[in-house]
Image 1 (cartoon, rainbow, N blue to C red):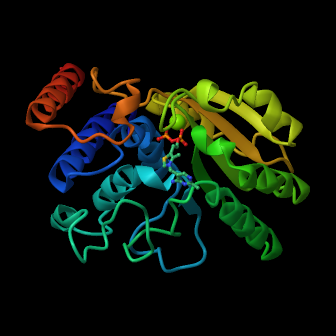
Image 2 (tube, protein in one colour):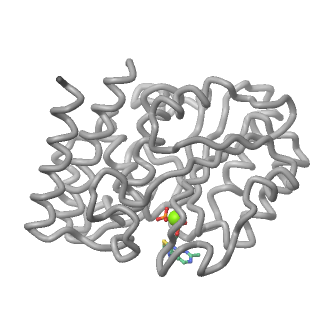
Image 3 (tube, rainbow, N blue to C red):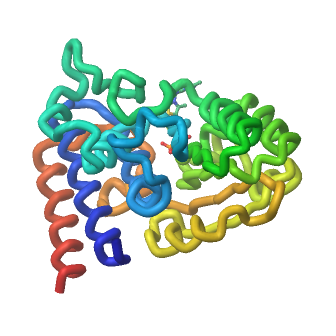
Length: 276
Ligand SMILES: Cc1ncc(C[n+]2csc(CCOP(=O)(O)OP(=O)(O)O)c2C)c(N)n1
Ligand SMILES: [Mg+2]
């Protein structure tokens, strides 16, 4: 898949995220839009996870620690044909497996998440397992920047470093906002790169909404032998929709009829520009 195909996919994915949240009447709109380029590149270029190999243990793993952005995950898994798009119509409906956080009841989802601060520990365990079994697969995990306030994240980082997990790739969706305000207002986390380096990680920083930069960075893993990898992916929360971008209340807001229409118009315009 070339760069333009990836960029077009991101636009299609953004449309699907909005569509399912609009129809399901609940969701984490802005956080899903901020991380969708990361999931796009992971699932279309890096992971090689598909419905055919999902039940095989010999493959890479992806744990979405920022589980609330599940609409981004549903969108990409649907595109990879883990389930039919019609199933996404049941999002948030009674008895549906498609709920507001990831569960293993949905085909393609590796691990239940949503209580922030747990995914990294799970990924570290998987990374240790691969080493013990002499397997060369990698484990990728996506964390929110607000999620870094969970102390358990920092415990897991120390273990990753102790076990020299150069097969672990931690991606931070650095959109600078969490649920009630900016990360620096709510619980300051800077200087972030220095902190991760002090915890023994090899750290790189990129534009996490650029599929090109994402594609390039994943090709360079492991960054250093015997060191766990950490990518600070600088993103915009709500990326792609002007009136959602960087607005705190969109963490958990659902577009109304007018907003949904406007958002689709913006995405269609972006799509036309790319196709020309
Ligand atoms: C343990 C725990 N505490 C609180 C919450 C409620 N919560 C859901 S999302 C969120 C903010 C997360 O911010 P961030 O990690 O920056 O996510 P993003 O900006 O990518 O949406 C909070 C506090 C939760 N899901 N789990
Ligand atoms: Mg955030």
